[in-house]
Each structure stands twice: as structure tokens, then as C-alpha cells.
Length: 385
Ligand SMILES: Cc1cc2nc3c(=O)[nH]c(=O)nc-3n(C[C@H](O)[C@H](O)[C@H](O)COP(=O)(O)OP(=O)(O)OC[C@H]3O[C@@H](n4cnc5c(N)ncnc54)[C@H](O)[C@@H]3O)c2cc1C
Figure 1 (cartoon, rainbow, N blue to C red):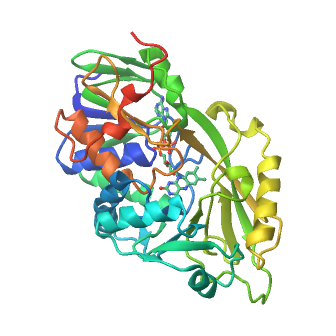
Figure 2 (cartoon, rainbow, N blue to C red; figure 1 turned 120 degrees about the horizontal axis):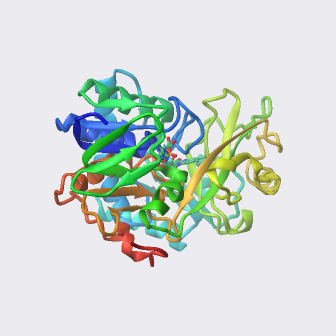
């Protein structure tokens, strides 16, 4: 074991761990980031080319965070020298005057964010490529848009190293020993830190269980589907904004989200916000034909300008908590081991603020945001020391 004691060791170089590592190194903390796979990899939750970002949330605490997150995305792209965030605008789709759209509008209003709440006839006029019932509309969030996921992840990791951080990939943490100085074992070496931040994504149970912590997390394989635009069709959705449809009607009550054609020109990305439960180590054993069938019905009904079968299918993983809010907290019994997990399919956009608050917790500081919705003790811990 080396004599080096890091201020903070971060486990997991997905977007949340990388954001925390970037935040700490930029503040001059001696930081080590450990990743189990050779980078880059596509086995977790942070790979791919696009993620939606939006200030439109039903809960004020997220809308509030998104102001700072948006500023950090801009800062990060300046530092890295490449584009990370494309501000295209975003729309939340739902029943006009229903709870979902009303809550989004209220949260945006209370947090001084710009928005438009369209009447149904204006929704139909502005988005002729969509076919929804007459009482449907949207809340338009002009400050939302598309995050270039792979480029954002690379920017965090490159800037982390530029600020003096050390990144070791291909280093799976197999054991964490608690103490004033925490020891982390990997097959080839052991590392020590005054504090540790664990951002394990879908491998959470593998790393938490030996620490005596069991959270009610559900890992789901998400089928990412791309749908080809029909040639010269008047419904071709080229002017579409990234959207989130709060599944009141279709898809057996599950939500759906999508992006205009970009990553694969001529193909629109539309996905079900739900999937079969898996273990991350056996991800491709799950059957997702039912999810594709459900989405075929959805696309046929709401997107007449698209071919009714997906032309490209990829996969990714969600790690969900029962209330779909992450856990950002110390693990029970240790004030120097922090966990960030359970981002429930919406954590990419939040990562600048998540990285900051995890970093603040690891440094024993008061976090800049109220973390009550993210406390670990809101779930009965099914095992403890
Ligand atoms: C299809 C899809 C679409 C999404 N769309 C959006 C969206 O539009 N907007 C949005 O905001 N969010 C979205 N999300 C969610 C967002 O991408 C995730 O919330 C986020 O990427 C989670 O990052 P993470 O760092 O927690 O997990 P991961 O990216 O999985 O990172 C965890 C890392 O920890 C490593 N690790 C685990 N155990 C160990 C160990 N023992 N030792 C060393 N390393 C370890 C893993 O290898 C992995 O690299 C989407 C997710 C998916 C899958």
C-alpha cells in the first residue's frame, strides 16, 4: 500500500462520481477517482450521446438546483473547449391543466425560470408532427436542451486531471475498510483517503452490502430506441424539442421521453422510461420485447411521421429508488463515507450540483442545498452494522 493519503477517494467514474471528483480537484483537494472498467465504457448509466436537461421539474428543489447546474455546464464547456450543452428548449407534455403540467409551471414560476404554458390549440399549431388528444398541451422550458453525454463525461474527467486529480481505470474496488482513514482495496493495490464518495450506479448493492447497507434500489435495463423519419412526410418531427410525456394515457402509465433527430441523422430517439429489472452483471439476459412492442404502439399513435418500428436499439441502465429521488448522504455509522446513488433515470442534468454537494459532505461542510429529500434514512435500512 502506498503512503499517500488522499483528501477524498471517489469510487465510480460515471457522471456523478466524475462531477464530484472535478468539483474537489478544482477546489485543490487531493483527489483520486477509481473506476472498475477501462474508460470509456458503455456498461453503466452515463454513456451515449444525449441526455435531456431542463429546469421544468414538478419539485422546486430540482428546479432550484438546475439554475446552478446550467451555469456549471457552461463553465465546464469553456474550460474543456468543446460543446457540452445545446440549449434547444424542452417541452413537458401532459393533460392541459392536469397536475403534471400545473406543477411544472408553478415550480418554474416560483423559481423565476422562463416558461410558456401553451393552450391545447397552440400546442397543436406549434408541434404539428405530434398527435395527442385535444385536451393535451405542454409547458415549454426555453432553457432546457440536450447535453452531449459522452463529451460532458470526458470534460469532467479531463478537467479533473488538469486540476491535479488522479484517475485510475480498470481498478475495481473490492473492499472498503472504515476508519478515520478509509482503506479501499482493488485487485492490484490499496488506496487510502480521509473521506470516500461512492457513486457506483447500478453496482450499488455489490459495494454497499459488505458495508452493511442495503437500500431498496431497483436496477432496470432501458431500451434506447431510434425511429426513422418517413421520407418527405409533413409530420416529420424536425422542429421537435426534447420532450417528456408524463404517461397519463399511453404505455400502461409509464412515462416516455424523446429527442429530435441528431445523433443518427434521420432517426428520432424515443424511449420508455421503464424497463425489466436486472443485475448489472447480467444486463443482456433480460427480455425487452414487451417494451419495444409498447413503444411501437406509442409511436404509431403519437408520431405519424415516423416508421412504426425502431431502426436502432441500444441499452442503458437506471438505478431507481422507490420515490425516484437519489440518496445523497453519509452511510450509517461513518461520517467520512458518502454515497450518491439511485438517480432514477434523471441524474445526468443534476450532476454539477450533485458533485458539489457530495464533495461538500465529504469535506465535512454544510451542503449548499437542503438535502432532506435525499436522506438515506427515509428508507428503512434492511441491514445495518
Ligand atoms: C437510457 C437513459 C436515458 C437517460 N436520460 C436522461 C436524461 O435525459 N436526463 C438526465 O438528466 N438523466 C438521464 N438519464 C440518467 C442519467 O444518465 C443517470 O442518472 C446517470 O448517468 C447516473 O450516473 P452514475 O454516475 O450514478 O452511474 P454510472 O454512470 O453507472 O456510473 C457508475 C460507475 O461506477 C463504477 N463502479 C461501480 N462499482 C465500482 C467499483 N466497485 N469499483 C470501481 N468502480 C465502480 C461503474 O463501472 C460505473 O462507471 C438517463 C439514463 C439512461 C440509462
